Length: 96
Image (cartoon, rainbow, N blue to C red):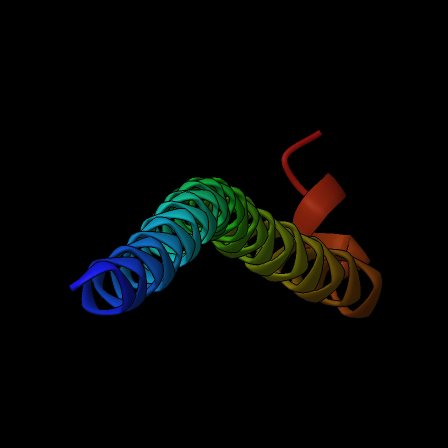
């Protein structure tokens, strides 16, 4: 009887040790997943900030392009007026 009780106690201790080890490994796995989730959330926040910055750059680039187009059109128009004035100086000054 004592032998059976001793083996039962030894088996119980082994099982308790296994359960403790599993609990420790489970806690470590949960902690690792929580860290992974935190890193993922930080990455998504950074990604959103980068997307917003790129959108802002795109808008500013488009606005600059529109301004350049307006400047180019005005420059072209001034050039045309200057050429007309150079070709027809008499009309410009004939009202005197």
